[in-house]
Length: 139
Image 1 (cartoon, helix red, strand yellow):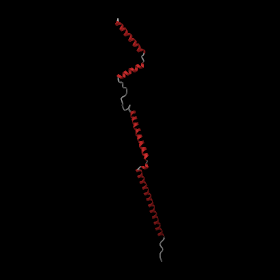
Image 2: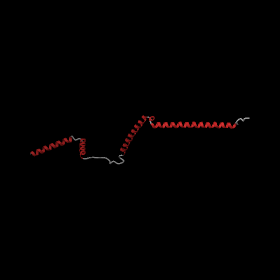
Image 3: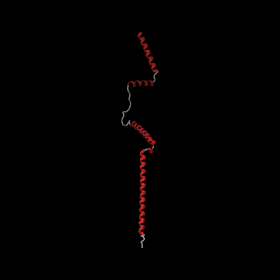
Image 4: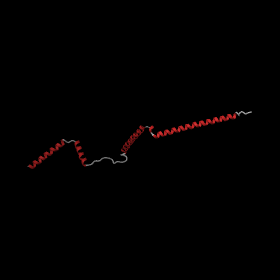
């Protein structure tokens, strides 16, 4: 009889534990625990292998980031050059001096041409006047 009593106690304990498990059964916790166990034992990877089409957005984003960095660097260098000022640039000063010298030379050339043309006109007028009125003859 002790054997039957032991089996009876084990049966009662297992029924009690089973009833306790059924009463406290929550599907969300079961699913969460189950997935945690499965995840721990089985690796799950879902995705599409990278190719030229599904990585295009990432490539465009990287290109946009690169262009934004280049634009910022260009603006920094441009603002630094603007801070120096064009009047302090030796190339600008040299070109300005060369243009000024050429301007003076052109104006001087026009002045000398005008003076030569005026002298020629006066010489022609004097020659024409000399031809038109003969010198007085001495008697």
